[in-house]
Amino acid sequence: MKLVEFGAQHTETILLLHGGGLSWWNYREAAGILAEHYHVVLPVLDGHGGSETAFSSMEDNARRLIQLIEERFGGQVRAIGGLSLGGQIAVEMLCQRPDICRFALLESVLVKPMPLTRALIGPAFGMSYGLIRRRWFAKLQAAYLRIPRACFEDYYRDTCAIAKEDMIAFLRANSGYAIKPGLSQTCARVKIVAGSREQRAIVSSAKLLHRAIPGSALELLPGMHHGDLSLNHPQRYAQLLRSWIEEK
Image 1 (tube, helix red, strand yellow):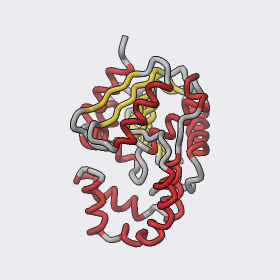
Image 2 (cartoon, rainbow, N blue to C red):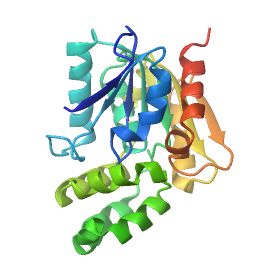
Image 3 (tube, rainbow, N blue to C red):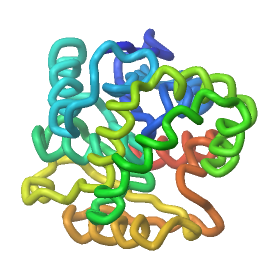
């Protein structure tokens, strides 16, 4: 598994899991800020540009990351954060290993299955996949996804490197993921955030997660879209995460 690391001199580790179709640079600026106090590890999720492993399932991705934590970080990290697909994998990690981290920050995480969307992903990408290598199309997609201009070349390079089968697989997994009963057993203190301008399903999912995780905190961010916090407001993201994991 490819890892990009910041602040390796620190003993306490934060693991941040990028959104679907993105990569470690999702958190590059926030990681640089957090590296003053923490060891920040940014894995490249299975099936994404730079990964050596095809995407199979949320469960397999979570197991591989748990194994990484067990082998390299003594079985537990200070915090896990995740955006969208990365947030779903973080939720799955909390289900599989309730004590995998002490804190978690879940951003824009969908846990309300969308069966119609899931059914249409295969046919839609079968017809349009070739467009992702066209720069004009990539620019339209980046604008829609609110990718910062400084990240466009990274986005374009890594999107072009995603195999069609992987893209279909992780998008299907994203639209079909649901909360599992074991989530309520997590030992982590969990904060859930979503933008007020996100799709209704994301806002509903944030509320479902809040109800499913005892003692969790929920914050709806006024005026923000999907992924805005970590992608476009890295200082605010880093500050929010630090205030959560350092709260007395």
